[in-house]
Length: 216
Length: 169
Image 1 (tube, chains in turn red, purple):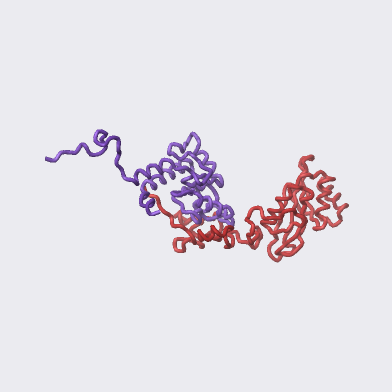
Image 2 (tube, rainbow over the protein chains, first blue to last red):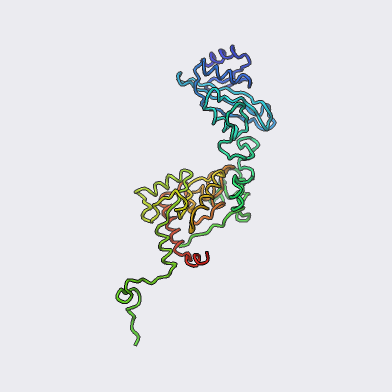
């Protein structure tokens, strides 16, 4: 059935190419074909549910740098599932893809999330705001060039930042999260935190209130 | 001849229903035995916090069962869960709205230190934005651990120089 679906679609959209996939059928489509293709899949092939909408960052300098992926499911045919991938247009800093909110209202928040974390601008989206990070956050955290620990910026609220002297700081990574040193007898030194370079006993945590021990 | 003075201490015949004590002891006695929590439930620790309020663990035994969702009426903020940078200003503002005297319990690994969330989105310990009185370890802590933290906080409050602070405020 999967080969059937791809060849049927290819007859209608000649620029489609089959995408290697271990399970369900998948196609690569040019960006201009995405909306008509998804409409065709929804209306003529019964893929009525957009289960996910994500993007892939192929790392800085790659061409294309970003690919958006649409995951479609049919609620009427058991097991019918298809993925559509399309390379984004636009620049590396501001990739662009068409919004599919006109096809599925549920695409709204998926696209906001994709914009928030990857920075893909969805053209035609009714309200493209950040959904997880706060408004005004200057980065897109799931991009390959964004460090997991984060980048130091200001707190979302100026008054609180002024009062507490706290900033959004890079989190201590200790050579990678959850990586303990093997073969260490002293468990305190085996802890990921012991390898931490961002703060330690010698270099105190910035803006940290010293621990007040409670004595009986 | 020196005899033991049996009239010292409480004697209703002598003092007529009056008990002599220190002001600190009286004030702290009042404060420790009705600490109304501000349940700052932000993640799964809040589930354990609810268990603490339930019949099995029953935080009412310590006078802290009155969970106040209004910061104006709360004495102790229990930060139960992961504090993200997005939420941090709100946590601080709610703390600012609480009337003095006020205390903070950082419940669980996330509130104490960021826990396992070593990431761009998570505040690495709520003590960066509010002064914490008691830290509770655990992910999440057992209800008993939170009760222990409350008892520790109570013993801490009992030693506070309440009168001096009131007069100097």
